[in-house]
Amino acid sequence: MGAIDTSKGSSVDAAFLAPFVSGVVEVLTMQIDIKVEKQKPFVKTSDFQPDIGIIGMITLDCPQFKGVVAVCFPQDVFLKLYEAILGESHSELNAEVQDGAAEILNMVYGQAKTVLKQKGYELGKAIPSVVLGGTAPVEAIEGRSVIVVPFKIDFGTFHLEFIMQD
Amino acid sequence: MFDLNTKILVVDDMNTMRKIVIKACREIGFSNFVEAPDGAIAWERLSSSQEEIGLVISDWNMPNCTGLELLKNVRTDEKMKSMPFILLTAESEVVQVKEALEAGVDNYIVKPFTKDILKRKLQDTYKKIHA
Image (tube, each protein chain N blue to C red):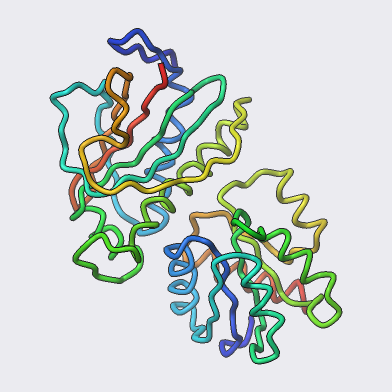
């Protein structure tokens, strides 16, 4: 697997990103036995404006990747996912459900870290955080290269973003 | 297997993960739980004479007092040193597991996990303690 080049001149080793993508599939499949379909990755442009309700994100600073990894859910998709995981129905993204997005990403990161360590990559501890609403995980990503990996599940679609610090 | 009336202390700074653990334990048949959001509060719960806790399931990485630090506190306390203790971790790193085993953990579970994995870990833990 080689490097993924972006239109902004950045590149990232696809082998570094792959365990995060497979981690999403593994975590959700194991947690709720759901079919998770990975869609074709693309470089984010201004045309991509999904209605995001909640975002779990971690900041990474290692030789292979400096930036943010974010898992972005539309509100209805996240609430249905939360209900499937815990059997609790919520109508809004209240404080009780918000750390669910961070926990999903935490588990994905743990899976990815284990796989990457076997390949010789070293990742430190990362503390996930949660952001509500908007169309982008962080306001300050204007001008940054972002790779988007969409996923389709029974409840709709969500996506991972790899936001590179150029 | 642990008596289904065993009071389980579930420790995790993530509300969602505490709920996931408790839901899986309920599906196995347990019904008696105490929760704590970090190791320091968990230690208070354990130290309280009002709580007759029979099993600890604790996350590893938490603010204030980690799961490993909580484990070490438990293992050095005369009254609690034989408390069944299972650590949850998001990473199956050999170095981490070795450190936990040296500190006296009875078992560990890598997140994510299914109800069946948790049940098997509880059965294994019980057998190991009562061997």
